[in-house]
Length: 293
Image (tube, rainbow, N blue to C red):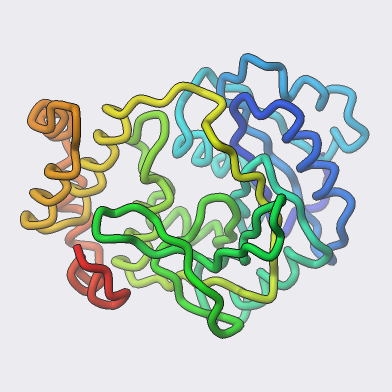
């Protein structure tokens, strides 16, 4: 690892990524930045050996590899942040391709106080002209990519595939939801929490990264885990009306049992703490971004 204090820590959560990890790191180290950075790879219980190459990788001294046993997407990112030394945190999927000065351009609006969280345009590696500029939500809380607007534009949801946030802001909101299971809603929950706590999330449209969009996840997902995360998010941030709407989104699972499981974890204490801390309520958020939910 470099002895210089990094300005930014780039965190890659990884699980069964195959050759993508090496391709992503090759791309990262091939592009230019004026900022000193460190790389943290969190291998969350991969069984395909996708990170084994790091032991002999030419840039291995710049990489910190952390191995875990399946703590889930949200907590893998939190663990990476816990080990980070940078003033800023970049959370990136391990299937990206970068361009010169992407770090520098994304950091500028953060350093100048124009926003608190920033993401680039995210393009399909197989169709680079197909670009999403941040995300919003449909009436069933499914994400929808935004179209291109001005150079720096507010966005309802920051895609977890690539974004930068200051370490202090990340810590002030408590990072990603620590009670989430394997996968689901981690990007949405963090974005809503940031907005409700008074922070601003934006997309910088003149910066683009290429993303490998996969047809399926390289690990097993559980609908019950996804619905559990949905209800945990609802109880953390939503009024009773929207909690009931979230329950209605649960299909082919026991919504009452999932709700009971969430409540047993002490989520109501977190709800009360969040409600005391936030500057806006959930209706403000949905009205601001014209989301019908």
